[in-house]
Every structure is written in structure tokens, then in C-alpha cells.
Image 1 (cartoon, rainbow over the protein chains, first blue to last red):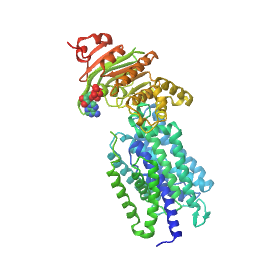
Image 2: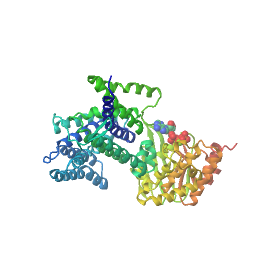
Image 3: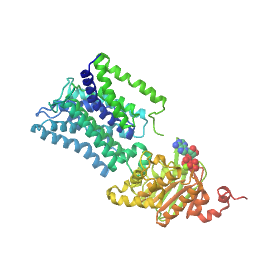
Image 4: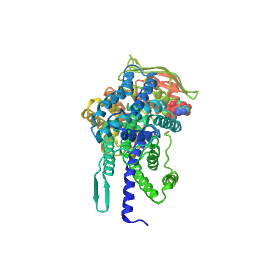
Length: 342
Length: 239
Ligand SMILES: Nc1ncnc2c1ncn2[C@@H]1O[C@H](COP(=O)(O)OP(=O)(O)OP(=O)(O)O)[C@@H](O)[C@H]1O
Ligand SMILES: [Mg+2]
């Protein structure tokens, strides 16, 4: 048996990791609801953001920028075949102009060594654009395809990106600096500064997302697209634009998660995949449609994982992923299925 | 010049023709109607005009060729469709549905969009009572009202209605047709697609009869209402 303080520590660990899974689950639900894509490369965004954050040393330009600019170029060439006039200009701005601007800003800011929060922002800025660029390259052209075809494209993007990750970051893992060394003691609960950061950032992101969906027209347009794609088109919402916004949000959320997790564990170029997969498990429990359910499930996954790691660490992942089976069974019995619309 | 001038529109599903060389026009400020039996291709024709499905032929709107524009760009230009399936945002409130109807005026500011909402509520008072209710919980008639209200929030130049009376109780059907007549007085041009030929002919200036994917008769609604073939087939007149 374990004592109370071990129990509390495990729960606390689980909640902190679960918060990160919750962010990823939200990103996955959002992207799926709007574009019907299961965004597997969300994991690579996490690793790349973590590695970029950990690698900021005040001297070198983040190597991931080569990837961001390279994908930008591919996205531009892919889109330039069809776009003309104004659309071509917007495409050039988003695929070439934005990555170039980010690179210029980052190169100017890195030597200033502005501290940990600035470093976090730099890592997010460098990596988040990968998601919308991937959308333009791999998913937007398949907007009318089936969920299965989109899933295959997603697996392809994941494999390609993780290969490029090895090229860019190398096989070594890295761990980022904690945001704060402070420790908060409340009776038996001992909260390290990083845990507080994770929980606060998760909460802030969720409130921000909620406000965006609730109070802005752009947010309402995303929701509308998720609810009824044809209805959305009929009121004049360009669904590829909505998809782009969804991927932007997902990229930002995943990059934030990567930076948050960087000080908690050593991350390798392909380490984000398992983290993303846990977010995916939670998203599935939410039926890929319900944000609150997915967030709660993510916390549950985090706690299950932390207890599994303590009791039988060799079987940690097995236990976590096996945990989804009864949930899936229950869901399928209740006929709440995640199917193609129409 | 016609507001809408569709020329030689054809639609095929996996090689099977649903619409075959159909031409129709709608004049500014008029109600035009398309009548025809089940499966005649009415919905397919509207979907083609709206750019929702691939089609052949040319769609001129307000003098511009819009044949190659995606749906949202057609909406942007003032074309609107209230589809047979309504396509409401079921898990959003009535108010949110209406607000999104004004999406094409997103540059105009919230105050102006709110004015439009008051107009929609005046046209359909039932919607005002249900403003905070989820669209998915509305009755059939209320859904149709919301679908029309949502389309009108965009202040379209041409409103296309696909069987607005489908599946509704007679009293509500009467209300809906009365509202369409009001719209004409407000200067909205309407393309009305109906199986209810009597009501459609009474309401419209011009009409086309669509059968098996082709227009078999077209002309003045009054003349068509008197035409023997129409009276036999669609108005149920005994011979
Ligand atoms: N998505 C589809 N795939 C294959 N065939 C279709 C599809 N939609 C319609 N059709 C066929 O095309 C023809 C025309 O259908 P459409 O729905 O346009 O007719 P309609 O006049 O609107 O009929 P209704 O009065 O029942 O609404 C029908 O034979 C129908 O079976
Ligand atoms: Mg129809």
C-alpha cells in the first residue's frame, strides 16, 4: 500500500501531465471537428517546440526555422499552381512572408537573451506555423476526401515530419529549463513552480479558446463549420479558411504544450508522438466532438499513467492504452460513433 | 438584363444525368418558380446554381459569370439558398444561427448586424421567442423560418428556396408563403422551387416545369396555371 503523501504526489503528477494531454486533446478535437482530419503530427509539433525551447542558448539560430521555411516553400509551390491575383499574394504572404519574418525576428531576438518567457515565445513562434503549412500541403487539397484518406495523409505527414525532425534535431534528447524554481507548499501538497506554470498556462489557454469560440465571429464560424459544413458554406464561410484557422490554433496549442513539457521530461525528436497519442486517447473518449469530456478524460489518462508508472513502470504505456478499450466498447455499444458526415 | 441567367445547366451523379441542359432566368425584383415532381432534379439544379456540386453550363449573376466560383464566393456576391435539408447549426442558438447568416457583412460592425436580426425577428416573431433556444430543438416550421431568416440576414440579392413548404402543416405553409409575398414587396428577388404547384404559380411571375431533368414548359405563371398539361398533372384538375 502507498501512504497519503505518495498518493498525493502521484495524483499531482498525473494532473500536471494530464493538463498537457488535455491541451493536445483540445487541439485534436478542434482539427477533427472542423476538417475531419485526425492530426497525428500534433506530436511532432510538441517535440519540435520542446527541442527548440531546450536548444535556445542565446547564440545559435533555432535549426527548426529551416524546416518552417522549407515547408513554407513547398506550401507555396503547391498552392501557386491554382492561386491567382489576390489569392496568390495572400498565399505568398502566409507561406513565404510569415516564415521569413519569423526567422528575421527570432535571429534578432535570440542574441538579446531576454529570458525564459521570451524563449518560450520564440519556440512557439518558430514551430506553430508548421501546422497551418502542413494543412496547406497535405490536408486542404483533400478537403472532400473521406476520413480514411485524410488519416492516411496524416500518417504520411507524421512519418515525413519525424524523419525531418531527426535531420534537424539529431537523435539526442534535451530538457529545457524550468520556468521557475519556486516551490509552493500547501500542507501535504508540494507544488513545484513548473507544475504551477503548466496548470496556469493550460487553464489560460482553455479560457482563451472558450472566449474565442463564444464571443468572436471567427470562433462562431469555426463552430458552425464543425456542426454543418454545408450550412457554413451557405452563409459564406470558406471552409478551407476555417480549416486553416483550426490548424493555426492546433499548432499554437501544441507548441505551447511542447514548451510546457520541455522542463518536465527529456524529449527526443520523436517523443511527442506518444504524448500526442495520449491526447488522442482522451479526444476519442470525448467522441472527437466534446471538449469538456476530452479534457476530463485527459486528466484521467494522466492520473492513470502516473499510478501505472509507480506500480508497474514497465507496463505504463500498455496500461494507459489498454484503458481506452472499455471506453471504446462502451461508446460503440451506445452508438455514439465518429463517422463521416452524410 | 436578368439578375440570374443560368444557361444549359447539366448535373450528373456518377454518369447518371439528373439535370440536362436546363436554362432559367430570374428578373430583378420578381418571384420565379420551378415546379416539378419528385426526383425531377430541382434540388440538383439549385445545388448547381449555388456551386455545391459539380455541374456543366454557365451561371450568370448580375452580368458576371460565376460558374467557376466556389459556394462562399457566390454567397459573397449576394446569392443565397435555403436548402431542402435546412442545414441549420443544430447545437447553436437561434440567435447565433441568425448572426452567422450575416457572415458576409462581417466588415460592417455588430450594431448593423443586430438591426438585421430585429428585422428577421419582425418577419418571424416566433424566432424572437425562441432566440436563446438551440436550433436543433425547434419544430419543423420554426426550422424553416430560421433557415429563411438566416439566409435573409445576409441581405441577399437573390433568395433561392428549395421546397419551403416540405413537410409542414397547412397553417404554417400559408404563413411561409405569405412571408415570401412580403419579401417581394421588400424588393427581394426569389427563385422558388416547389412541388406545391398551385401555391408556387399563384405567387410567381414566371415559372418553369422541370421533368426528368429537363424543362418541359416555361412562361408566365398565370398562363401556365391555365395550361391544360399543367392543370392535369400538377393542379389535380379533373378532366
Ligand atoms: N447525391 C446523389 N447521388 C446520386 N443520385 C442523386 C443524388 N442526389 C440526387 N440524385 C438523383 O438525381 C435525381 C434528381 O434528384 P433531385 O433531388 O435533384 O430531385 P428533386 O426534384 O429535388 O426531388 P424532390 O422533389 O424529391 O426533392 C433523382 O433521380 C435522384 O435520385
Ligand atoms: Mg428536392
